[in-house]
Image (cartoon, one colour):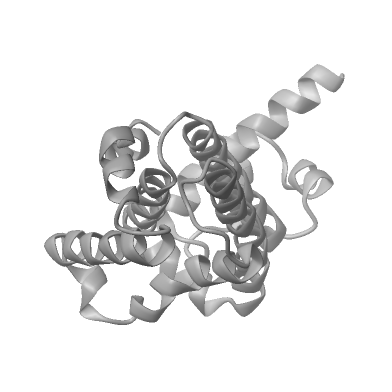
Length: 213
């Protein structure tokens, strides 16, 4: 029975994600999701109290999936600045790949937005802290207040979120180039460390990873 229940839940999650991404949160009913998943509405409510709970779980699972990919790459032996590049690039590309209708629905439903925002921010802060602490330990980054720097790195792109930077691929590329240039001079201990960065830089193809997912 447990195996059948797990199969039903997995099928439900797969169909819910497919429908939410195609039609958005508001464009899909519980009846439609249950029918597409091949289960009754009563069974759906055994797993989730509401459509909102189901939607939040879909987004959390998607976040966890990408977090696994990100942490695997951050664990590799690259310079801290290269890890900054990878993380920023990956996250921005994820945002751009979300269907506009899905993004619109999340922003319009305050309760959903706050739940997802809190979950993602906690994970992102842990990622930034991991990169900073590892970089400091290896001598790649100067000593600093890791808590403050983690918050800064998390919040910095938000300052540009409502500007034209994120409406054009070339502008995004230029934004990231300027941001990474700032990091090299603002986060490293001095100009002598630039040779260290150049020697240890690897090529992170974040676009490849996000496309494959």
